[in-house]
Length: 595
Image 1 (cartoon, rainbow, N blue to C red):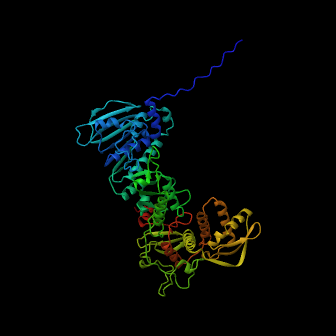
Image 2 (image 1 turned 90 degrees about the vertical axis):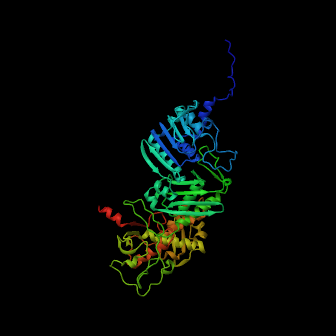
Image 3 (image 1 turned 180 degrees about the vertical axis):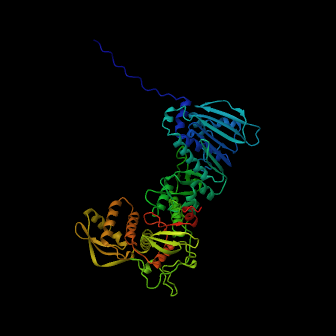
């Protein structure tokens, strides 16, 4: 039997793809979901000089998207080119360096038209009528006259009908609508000078007039954020940073409420987000994200926006300078005492911090100070001879006048200080959390100056540890000495403690050393030295602070309140928890149904 000779298949033939298919493939890079289409259309409206923009979504934007603006509009000839790939009016001289518009690629409308049913009705000012052009799955229809007001109306229907595979990967209409709403909010925050309206399934989500930045941030970020806004203004060379950040007690579970605008463009830049996270690192709870709305302006030649088709990523030529500007500016804004901002923590009813105060009362002569903190270290002034004894009596208005945290009335549960202010509000202070921040800042200040002052122990303490933890302490002995902690190896599984930071007072060396060893072991050598030292400082502060359950007299309570008002970042403890809350008279009356 003869065997037929083997026939190899012919080599693959390279052939050009049909233009319609090419456009559909390219559309997937630009239009990933309804939110991307909304973003591109609103950016076009902003680039057209619109003063009013209205967005309406049906079926999460999958069924229909409509964007209406009062911008410059397009004449018929421009309308025909607008739906062709790589046709744009935004690069008149072909300069990809000095880009002053949000869009510039000429890909958005052709991509939408390749993946959906697109209709554009546009009328320039002064034109006799509007004109309409339609594109469905990449097929362009003829332009025809149409009724329409000056400006442009764009409708997108049946998104991804021409690319069913992409449509299968979309989320539910509700989820897609949430993403589109987020895109609209970011653009509305970036351009507060433009009136914005967003309607979802016939329901108005927001309808905002043209307004200043503060009003737009307050309108879009919510009342708790509005009450906690801290202004930011800074410059470095030709770069400027402005906007608002919220006090640490107002935070979110995700970074979705961080609005970052670079040269008028909303971005999700990792350099900026990292800088925001670092600036808040010492004052916000782990796993929470700060709320910020920041506008950064840099020279055009120092920014590359041609990084990704979505144009939400940018590259900075001087990334280190940008990072330093953001971190430094935010840390300075957050560095006020407990009376320098008005955050409203997410507690029911909404509770509000207070504004900055001034003078300080003094503890009474002969009464004990804070356990473990020397009077000179806390900076308490010497008491005048005429301070009256107000124990057991409500303080007169003069006693609390000018003090944002008011005057102490009592201690409840041996843990919380109750105070009243001259604006008839009640202040509740967590004594341990508050004193922890005071100790933390005292240690940090000494560390930055010339090292933490140490206090030798009368009898050196031997602390037994797992061998790995003992090794971590031995490796970090030189760094710990800068923190006022003097120790040396004492066998394979122990260390000998000779001195503790003086600011901690009579802290328990056993518990303190074990906690520090665990902290260093958890950090590992991969964590930068400043971060490791700051973690150790936080541990020390916790051990050297007034504990819950420690009874205090009124003079000590008042002294703690005054020190909180003068200490940076005193609105939160070292772990990001609030140190105090404020109940206004209106909020108390609301609790009792009086309002």
